[in-house]
Figure 1 (cartoon, one colour):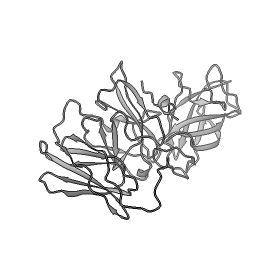
Figure 2: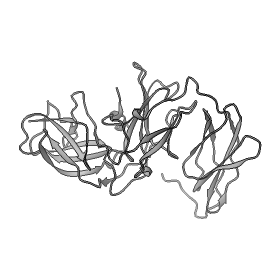
Figure 3: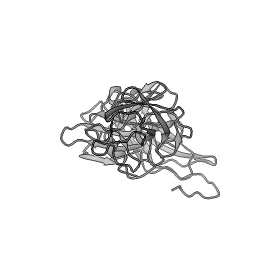
Figure 4: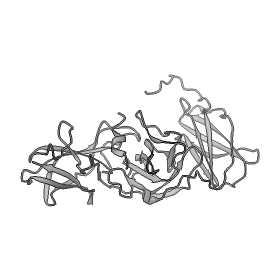
Length: 349
């Protein structure tokens, strides 16, 4: 069973810089992960660096293969399996370019038994588990060999979210994705990665996604992007999806009252008025007001719709249970820009 919701709620510095800027130090450490006709190069941050350049050779003469890289990894593709390649990385700022990092070798190889595999259908909204992804939203990727030697659940323990958990990283476009968790179910063997789609890809129709499991790297999979794809997080086995004002679950033992304001947590609600950095929490109202429908035909008054200020990629919608709502369990959906969420249950007194 997917553990996305619990994972998100399981974790709740700026670097000092000198007044006088100087050429940054070489990046360290530098690592490489070979794949099928490709190599994933990663490095540690260099204080004061604005970007990085990546150099490679298979002949002894280095050439620059990437410049102005602003994240800490790069994938070189189109390589020849069985050929040895060498790499180094430099750090760059307005003062100049650093000395080269340590050089490191890698040999791309054909796929092996540890190859991470997934498909576009395995990239899902983390709340509804419907295929699809939205910039800024939380997604769950299902696949095989997404990690190596992992048993159970490994979660992020800090914000901004890390881009590596248990040696696992995900490259989306040219950006390392912020990760919530990597999970392998001990009973079923099913594997998943919970992550945020970086906000940088707003407005794009699709993005390339590649997974590094620490041993090798997957083929690149093109994943379609949606402007919005609302999904309500379900809070228990009864598919209840709403909280009282005291953050307790609205359920059969403690139903909502007509006229009460309740809260739903969602992801995939799209653009917001103030976009936080990817991997970081931050407030911001949704660009459009959602429509909350209770019991199939009652429209609820929306009091707030936007990002939760405490969590990454998590939205909340506060709405008033319509005064005419009949007693019993009512199905609720939330729509934004004409796209409707999954259904969640709202027990009403």
